[in-house]
Picture 1 (cartoon, rainbow, N blue to C red):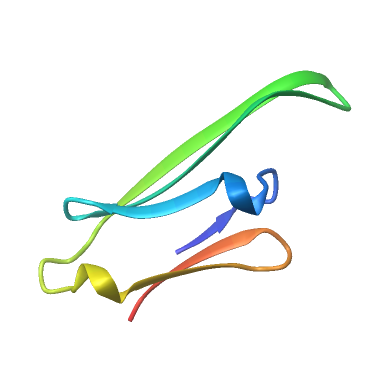
Picture 2: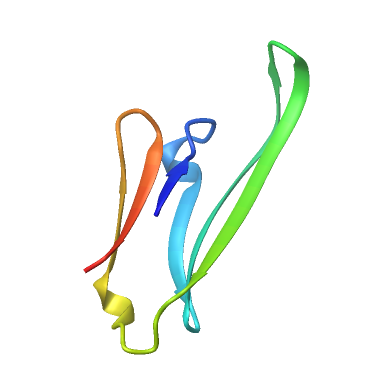
Length: 72
């Protein structure tokens, strides 16, 4: 799974296991940008196949702001 998260700082991103789901989430408080004031938040959940080990999930943030989650 590839997610474009360039609007978020690396320390604002979290990838964790919740039950049988991989959950990626981020939130940052209101800040000013070129359009005014904005706050952003997202949460994505992906169900793991029943035969997958939750420890086999790897995540990596690319230099251009793409969060990559792999099942190994």
